Length: 591
Image 1 (cartoon, rainbow, N blue to C red):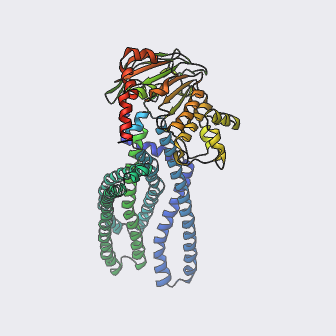
Image 2 (image 1 turned 90 degrees about the horizontal axis):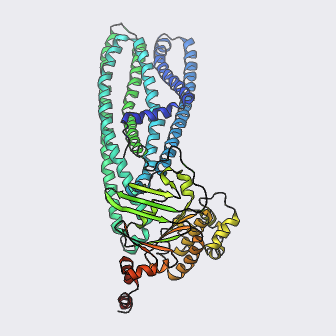
Image 3 (image 1 turned 45 degrees about the horizontal axis):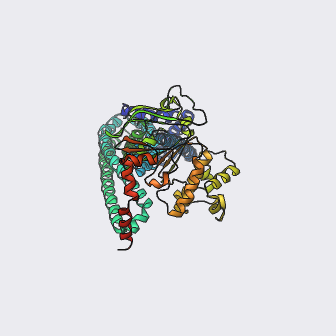
């Protein structure tokens, strides 16, 4: 559920971030004022250059004006550097803050969020969208302020030179602002579509690069190339719409500027011919007006950039305003280290109105090994995901000892739990750092001992750099069994009293499974353990077995007791170990 926050408050928040750099902003604005004044002075100097030097032949002014020009342009250059550096510093600072905040917020979201959102889309928010906001803050806002100051400075010059002609010249400005507003709206609408298309493209790239082995195995390279081209075609069409909206603004502004200049030549030229005004005054006025129209035209392009930035801000704040779903108690209880029991009382869990668990009541003693079995979709993983609060139950209570986990500190709760899943998630780092993940102060001896207990030490030592070997993205340089043993070593070094094993051996060959099973026995010793397994042969060591069907516990007991009941467990057992199943497997092997 999203918070009810008005769109304007989003932009106000960005402005507050900008205002947090008041000192740099103040000096940047001083630099912009210097630029604006130097532009106005440049326009004004046209009059003495023409009247005093070329017409009146004043040699003194011939020396003074070039010195003034050099001084003006030196100050102008320094001011340009100052405002560019300072405003980019502000822009980069704002973006760093937004990026850090966005990443931190995403990390705190529950698992349902990551199931609903595409990884590539989230990556696009942090990289592409935030970068567009940077362009708005550091470039567009800077240029807008500078151009507004320049317009004000030049307006003063033309009114000083000839206020009547200035009034006529400025009649065109209100008309000129119409395309700025109208084309800006169009750009913003199209920009949102472009950013969404770019996010979809990033998501597609992430999926196809991550699943490249499957793409090649099924010979789908050309299919994926075609799908990629379809997405780039969509992005191309949206980008061209944005180009049209941006490109139309320039010719409209050029024509309106031409109308104003034509009028000035007609009206001002007549005043010079009639002797009412001098040539120097006229050309100074003309130079100021030409300089004035230029920043007005630029404002259209800058407004386009601002509209793109605001569209990107909307997409970023759509994530930032999303509630995490898992909230800390106001006065959280710290769960102490040590053995723990776990209790489920009338627990219900729903995903998008689909019931995953219904009325679960369960107590697991400290140090007990509980196996969870059942067909896929029965609710096994949903049940164990509630213990570390990856999700919160829709109804009911979960207790660690006598503490409701919603009242516990999330950090202290998760400190008590170690998880090993069939998805061996490792990071692009050394083996040693992957084992010590979650215990940054682990000594080398602790890392080595964990590796030995996980039956990983021998293969690690055979690697060129041992524990300092980089394992590549997602541990791609290791075999499945090796990766799993590293994950077990990571859980061992955490030394958490509650252990969750979610299909930890399902993807392994027989030899690897035997080694991993030995490592798991070391890991489970003395811990309250929840074991999810499809292969019933791997849970013979369990103290108790529960069978989940459609989110409900339908059977509970020891292996032999459940077989005698001849219920769901016996049915699962027969499916895996019955003679017809073995005969069928043999027939497939030897057709």
